[in-house]
Length: 120
Image 1 (cartoon, helix red, strand yellow):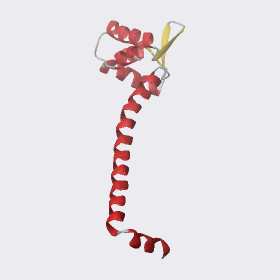
Image 2 (cartoon, one colour; image 1 turned 120 degrees about the vertical axis):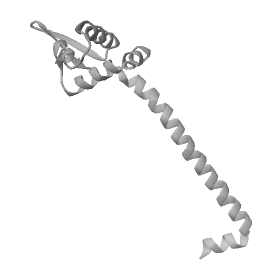
Image 3 (cartoon, helix red, strand yellow; image 1 turned 180 degrees about the vertical axis):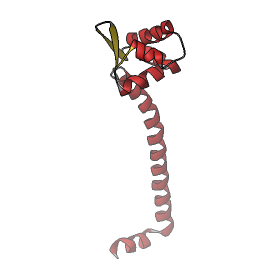
């Protein structure tokens, strides 16, 4: 997970992943879409390949890169857990508040009034 997080921390690599989401591309096609040097793009592609986020295949004289989202799953699960825990915590706190409020109101009305509500 750390290697994937490091790989996607760079904006150039995130942009490469976005490009590869749409279609497989050769290293040259990827490099043409940036103003940085081809060797720099090559280094970014190596980081993405080593993290498992891209796969490459040599076809003739070209190296074609494809996105592989599989390595993102552990990171996504971890991030979802952070977000979901906070959201569910707030929902459960609100439910607890409502339960206590309802109990207080029932006690304040007294048992006779409570019985009348349920027999009506």
